[in-house]
Image (tube, rainbow, N blue to C red; front, side):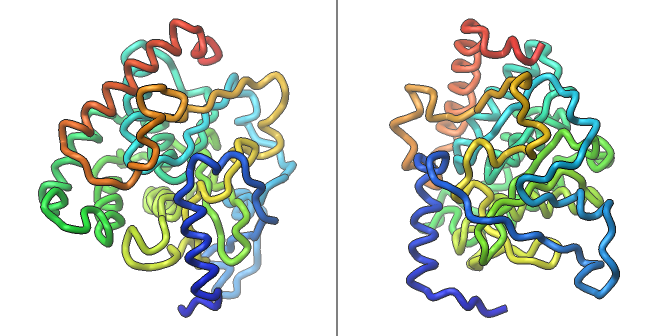
Length: 299
């Protein structure tokens, strides 16, 4: 499908999407409702599907509204591994995330998904590095460019448990996608299948052109790009989940003084040892957060 947006504007949008440091300070555009495959084929819309992809400011009710806390996983490219380190710390220290609302965009969507499905961050990292070896990432002049999308898809397909759809369909996992051309925000919180969960993640991580050479990713019949593009913290949950009595914690690697200076490296290919170092730094910072009682909201 040809894109009608001028190339100069697309280049500007991509430049903005790369600036994760400013992503929480910019205002998102009005929402655009993503339709399902069934709707595209002419079948009537139904309420159950509309709850699967929510435009912002939806006031519908959900059982997830009783959750104690909200965890936000913003985008960060390769610094997914820092978030993986935080998740590893939480798992190893018996923090139960079952009743916590988890929301992520871009690489943060991957983090939220593995946290929700109780996947070991160490297993996830080992598999990612194995796939990178097989793809020759470390020797490629362009690194991950053009092949990252296929790697992420296969990684998710190999990692996710067979019952992943059942595990995530309590509406406590929110995946942000950015529909085009509106560049608003849609929240995916109900998934039609395990494959649909994978596709939602693929849409959320789709950095234009970088992942597979395409500007947008086709999700449920509509083009989408990186979910962290122009995202604010308030975009990560529906209005019903933003009550004052629901505590919120943003797991952003830029809060870690050790990692903050490396923000520009979010798509840079580094060594395997550097990947493990990022994960371990996430664990170290999580311990600091725990000492500061930031995780008390998860108890």
